[in-house]
Length: 124
Image (cartoon, rainbow, N blue to C red; front, side, top):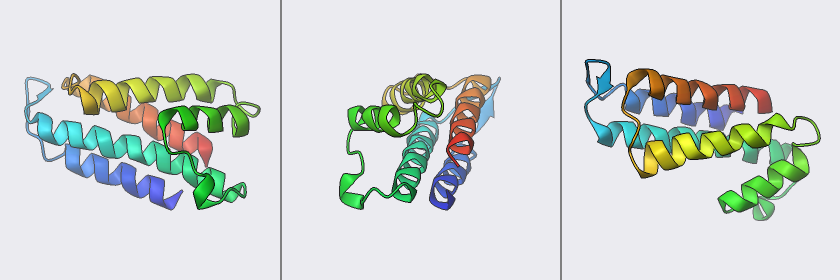
């Protein structure tokens, strides 16, 4: 999980570049970028797990739907909660945080990042 953790740590570094005022991040460029990199860290964790299970690089998921299928096939048997957590991560990090840039409240951002880190740690 070295690569997934590296992405996650890079996301935190990017986030730290935004100034905070009144518990709100002021520079949405850094916040959006950090969410994007954190989400990629989650995907890297899934990829690394699948590679350990014997899948080839060609067999790696290439879309969110393919990641959902991989979770159902390779993870859900072990932990059915992972699928729900992935859906929340997809919505919070990728859609609300990165794509729309809707999350700027410090506590909300930290909660989303914590969810991503917990997910990565579960996959280890």
